[in-house]
Amino acid sequence: MKNKIYNSLFCFSAALVSALFVNCSAQKKSDILANPWKVKEQIEKEVVVPVFVNKTYNIVDYGAKSGGTYNNSEAFKKAIETCTKNGGGKVVVPAGKFLTGPIHLDNNVNLHLEDGAEILFSTKSSDYPLVKTTFEGTECMNHSPLVYAYNKKNIAVTGKGILNGQADNENWWYWCGSKGYGWSEGKGNQNDPQNRVRLIESGEQNVPVEERIYGEGSYLRPSFVEFFECTDALIKDIKIINAPFWVIHPMKSVNVTVDGVTVESHGPNNDGCDPEYSKNVIIKNCTFNTGDDCIAIKAGKDGDGRRVAMKSENIIVKNCKMLDGHGGVVMGSEMTGGIRNVFVENCEMDSPNLDRAIRIKSNSRRGGIVENVFVRNIEVGQVKEAVLRINMFYNVYGNQTGNFIPQVKNVVLENVKVKNGGKYGVLAKGYAELPIENVTLKNVTIEKVNEAYSIENVKNIQFVNTYINGKKVESPK
Image (cartoon, rainbow, N blue to C red; front, side):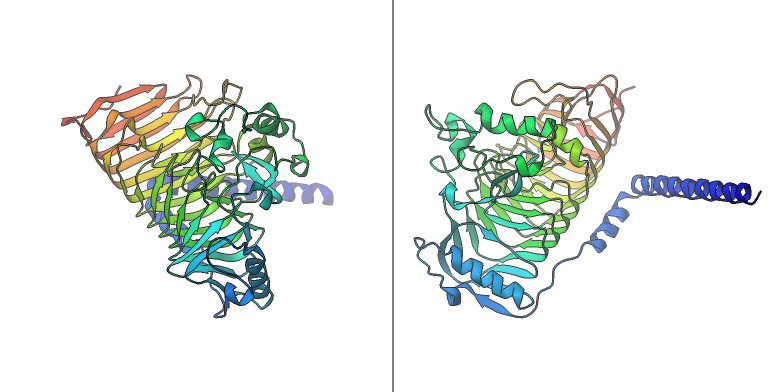
């Protein structure tokens, strides 16, 4: 009898806890839909910006020589090791040009470039050892990113100086296999079946990451700045140019601030900032002029993304300027783990070489969900294709069909003004079995667009006080 009473009480308590959990989750979900910008403010309060001990370690004191020809890898390494050993502080790069291999940050270190300082990164791939990293959404052991931190806390790259990856059609870029970026017959490239294709297959087969060995001869380009499994990271005021691949890549990191950074790099896959599997990321006061997406929020790809199964969430973009790029703020295409709670506000997007303002892309091989995307107070000068583009049939590298239908829901654009919208105001295509849901344009004005919208398998799209080419647009029934 005693056991029966205990079991009944236990079941009742478990049911009560479960009900409370469900109610709390539902409350949180309803909160963000009812007042998303209040939720954004709460997220901003949660983000921790690194603070450093007031000590400085000048790389010149550790043997660094300017001029751009002497390799200063050891000087950077010694200064960083000493700084973190003594409790942290600022590793200072003075005015001048300093050549180096990869720079690996450590706990409580702020790599600070003074005005006039430029770090030139070696173009010799053999200078970049194997580390745990990722390529296009699949984890692997590959060339170290140029600036790298793995499982570190309280780190930063700051200052008015320049990070120069020195990538061009002779170095790094031709690895993509495109003649437009310097590749020619006889040169290696990532598309060899033993390179990128083999990596994707290893993700599908769940090969341990430590056994996915690439590096020399594999032609998989490294990211420029990568914070991998880091907490409380900052990159501020730096100018970054000539990147081999993705430029700023927070990977599985929490509390990341990208503030006042300028990115100018027009190489292949030169996305400006790619938060992946990351939470509480603020990108503000930045300028992006890129060869690919200005900002691309990601969450892994295909089988490897389903293995990791982490969302990118609570991503804030504000007061930024987007120039050239495939998209201003993009979600995908590597979004298998899912993306939620994205806030974009007070940004300017304008270039004849900017294809879209807001873009979401996936396919049935990648799957994933994007939910709760809120955009407001955006000024768009010119885009080529569409103001809002949602493509669930994104196709690159051949056949991308599978059994994982992607989902998109709750996308709101508010107070958006567009002078030259290109081909479409809204271009959206979903699946009949899982339509795109709940898309709202409120107080949006779009001029010089060929077609107001082209939609397929979109459920509940609302145009509220929205004008395209001077005409008020009614919501389709």
